[in-house]
Image (cartoon, rainbow, N blue to C red; front, side, top):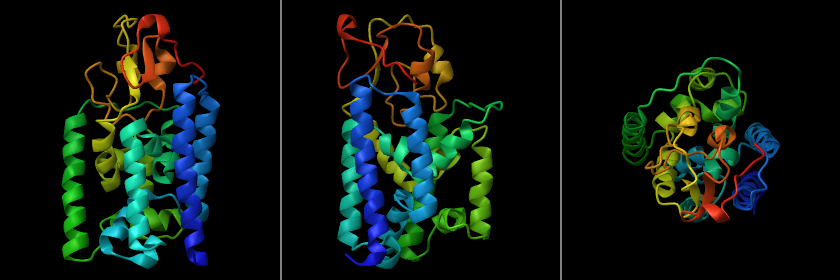
Length: 268
């Protein structure tokens, strides 16, 4: 492995560890809010320090067949992105929620104590992202052009002033009031992972202990807390758990858990 590939490998290994550890902590009811905050800070810092694991950009370079920009052979990049997708199918979107630097900076921005916009237009947002995904593929495959360059991910994390980095900064400022605009409206890899998350084996589920107070639905910034929601856009932020007043009503489980064996995941 050449020296320029080392940072990418470190970021990828970090992402795999985060997915595994966080999934275990959620499943074992050992998750704590401060762990999430720490992971967000570390992930954001890795984005600025080594620009990894920035999966949307890596998918872009893979589509462009840009080995130098990808920081690894194409087969290695494809294998890594596929592995994250498979883990998402099993555990849900922990990569997006805690490991991706692009998601981390938006999540941190959304923690700001300012009024929030929570439009319940989840399907419309997914359609918009689908349109961006088609444009992303056409630009990369047909024109060998980078859509994400217009959104300045690379320039932003490398502290380079450009039109693109200004666009991403504007989106980051929008993240103060609107939950993860880049992730929910633009990110091509996010679209891929959302399809995997919709079929995930482990996810947050309501049990028979739920009293249908709808506090979780009101707290969810991605409009994914309703009982029938597929959880495709669930970033496992835990806000629903924070407001749930009933022990055992919400569990992170691979199948609906009986009330008597359910325990509320506390600590966020």
